[in-house]
Length: 146
Image (tube, rainbow, N blue to C red):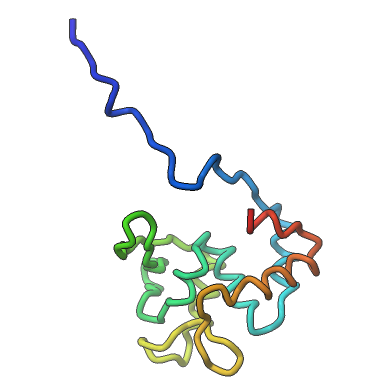
């Protein structure tokens, strides 16, 4: 008989995390939320809904990260140790068309999502427009900022 050591299956909780979030938007809520924000915030919010990506990853996207031929966007994540790790988001047809439109006319090294004045979206700059969009769409802010 083989003896197994179950220590490999032990999982430690992440710091300051007590349970997983289980909030999801319905299609109707997603549509309301997409239509609710100010025009400068709408593209990055729509990208979030199409990719499931975090704000920081979206704010640093450049046209070179979008591969229309295979329908992916390469994102960078800093979760865990803080080291950047690339991952690929596979887009549906709506996502491919959205990113193709957002990248059109931009140099491959430009940011895809910028503020109305052309400045980059910086850390925490999404909080106010997201809070305002949630209120306008009738979606509890806690669904995102719990």
